Amino acid sequence: MEKREAFKMYLKPGFKEEYKRRHAALWPEMRQLLHDGGVYDYSIYLDEETNTLFAFQKTRGEGGSQDMGGLEIVQKWWAYMADIMETNPDNSPISIPLPEMFHMD
Image (cartoon, rainbow, N blue to C red; front, side, top):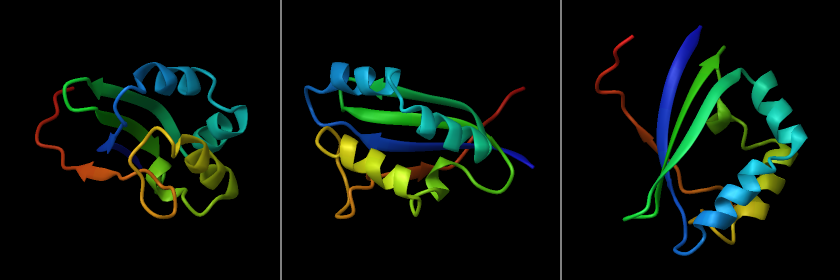
């Protein structure tokens, strides 16, 4: 089963370049976890006026990146990113699912 998911998160002001730097050096074990978890196409965009991050991913299988929070490496990544993103008390990024309103192949 293939699916598309979109969600938004929030970057703290002034951290655009740091966010890009950290993702450009995404840990190999995170990349592998996403791949093994069925995520095969994943992009994150920034609305610079609002510091809103817009994420879009395509997945194969039942889950996606939003279903991996119980894994130790994901929790380490969250802790690594917590200083530059708006987060929940467990360091997970505040993430709001966005319903698909239109799709054209």
